[in-house]
Amino acid sequence: MAGTVKNVLCLTLITLVAGVGLGYVHDVTREPIAQMEENTKLTAYKTVFPEAASFSDMPEATAGSEALIANAGISGVDIDSIVQAVDASGNKIGYVINSTTHEGYGGDISISLGVDNEGCVKGMEILSISETAGLGMKAKEPTFKDQFRNKTVTQFTYTKSGASQEFEIDAISGATITTKAVTNAVNAALEFYRSLGGGSI
Image (cartoon, rainbow, N blue to C red; front, side, top):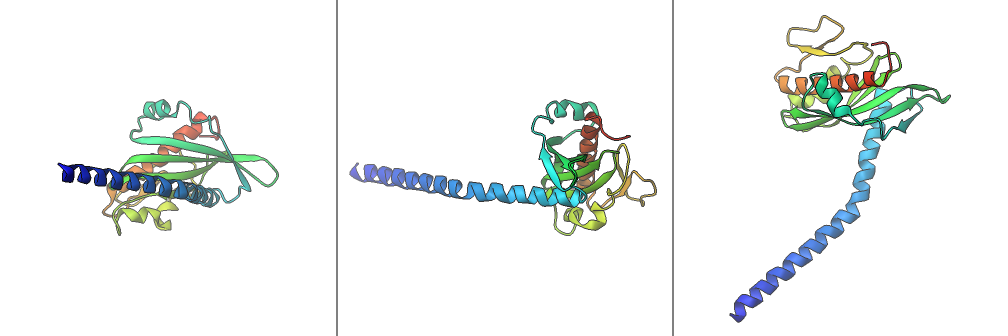
């Protein structure tokens, strides 16, 4: 009986110490992780909208985006956040929209899309991805990403037979699921952009 009580007390103590330790580690690492994520976003913003001198948060702008995306027939994508791109003179020159698709082969894929006031895509950058190495991870390569750059279209589609239209994207060989997921994330961001009343598309 005494042995059982002793074992229970030992296990309780170990659990308590482990819990306190994990809590401490979480508190210590939370701020650096948040800062790293913020730096990753800022780098992406500058990549997809190089003309911008600064970016202004629009925290309330994503309200209603879920229904908007669903009504456009796009599923499995969330609009995470949006910032306004501003040039050195203080002029508002477009937006950077962050979206996440839940339909990647290896899980969620998050992107940043820069769109100017005329509806031209300035660039697309991958924020986070965990697809198959050598296949879906090729979505991070310029060969794929740059296909979206400097195009003014209502919606992108992907093809396996060679893009011949402005709105077509060459699919990543052997990674159709990844291609579709990223294209949907881009299209959701474009749909949300149009809801803001910007651009000519």
